[in-house]
Length: 126
Length: 139
Length: 172
Image (cartoon, helix red, strand yellow):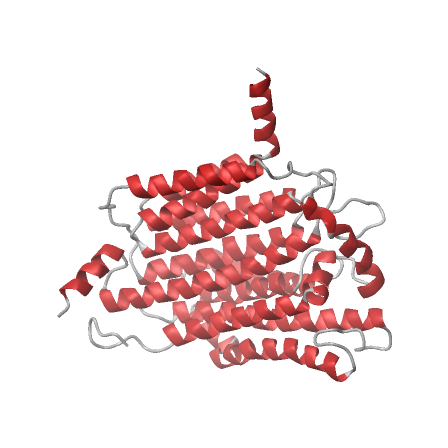
């Protein structure tokens, strides 16, 4: 019984990280299992978002507030993860756009965005 | 979508508020949530919304592609330029302490200029990406 | 809210219509922005809502317009990817259980936080610590990020600005 209670407490105090792991693994699964390139990019951005969640969860203090200084508050969340993730989001969408542009070009060259079809065309090419 | 009256009218109403909000987010970033990255994206979203509703050519008449492409490196140059000015005024690269008569004001000015550089690059890049995607015809 | 995110993720993995995936990604971004708000990261939430749900969705839909909207049925077995994913998850959860509990003020992550918060007003006069750290204390970092965005913009212009090749199947 005490084991169960301990497990429950562990789940509650690490719930954010568990969800992070779930999101990360889903992204990984999409990247490996799906041949469609747009889907792969969505998987990559899922993976990326899970890292945002991990960082922000680490910076949060229970009972704290957003790191904007005001005389009414004394406890603030850690500002550094916010800074890192803020820039990471914008860079993430820029790299996603580069990936999508490559997909558009691949579609123009091969007429498909499925990985298997592209490999097949490459094999059949003399 | 160009014939949809409701969308066109509502867009006309919303656009100025979006632009003002972007400017607010940019300049009020020191005291509330916001900064160059967010403001740049919101400003770009304004242009993109306009292009979606009124068509790409109409948007390109106002925000020309040449202008956007010039703004992408301009922002980086502003940012790096502030760093170099910090150098010339006797501190380290990107140390704004000597930009004004005292250190706190120097930092405020430095942060303001750097955020402006970020704003220019981010907004221009997002608009340029959208133009590139939208200008590409389906094969 | 986190559970809702997980449910949306399952949707993204399962659905094969890419338009639905784009819409689900947008919903996912909004949910993520709400979670970020709860985690006190207001700046990040603002960014995620505008970037992820706004620009990201527009770009995805633009790509789908230029390519195809239906994903092919998977031909390979899902056993291997599933095995890799579950294995990774097991290792990660094992690692996560050793981290400090959520929201603890005495976790090692928090060592530098109060320092930034105390110095921000005195040294830069900026109340929003995220802004001052972003542009001043870690200014070099942000310069790097700006250059990355610049590079991405140039790369996309190089890839897509040129007119589509006239011959079918022609590369460049």
